[in-house]
Image (tube, rainbow, N blue to C red; front, top):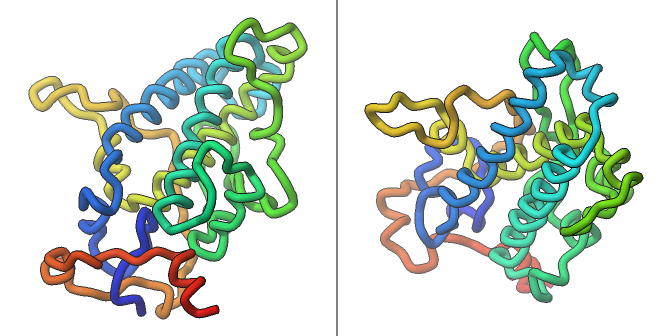
Length: 240
């Protein structure tokens, strides 16, 4: 088992209190806020059509905007994880070929996401299943900031947006674990509306991490130390 957590990488085994440390990731609430806005918009679109199967026939500017903004958030999250773990280069230069370097650390290809039974889809979504082979269909595409043409809007289908946001949800869960569902839970007006007025449409099933891959430490003691987190790529360089 690991005696210190990696930056921005959740693992099972102990409470995820360490994920709320400012040094681990100081942007947790901002990331939740941005994500929640995207899923709220997706939920509104799905309410109009009903099933997942019908989503492949829904397209247009609203879906295009959802895809463009969702991909930006996904890029931002993956870039932050790379940088925090000592990956070389600058965040603006990172591409899909860089993101896949996170697979040994996070095992994103093994994460599964389930939609509600009312969606009509019984099998899980596995957005990163084949991501080593290149950008997924839901990620590919040109999303110009202004004036998308008709073909761009026609290619922006709602099923791609569902897969992309499922992927983004996975990346957030892989960073913050059970803290994510707590942050995104619906709240009454007495305690504030929070991010959601309904529960997330996604339910995540993480990989089965081996005991030696899990964390095992006393956070009440570890949090007092300056070197309480470890850097994956920096550690790899030291062992070469």
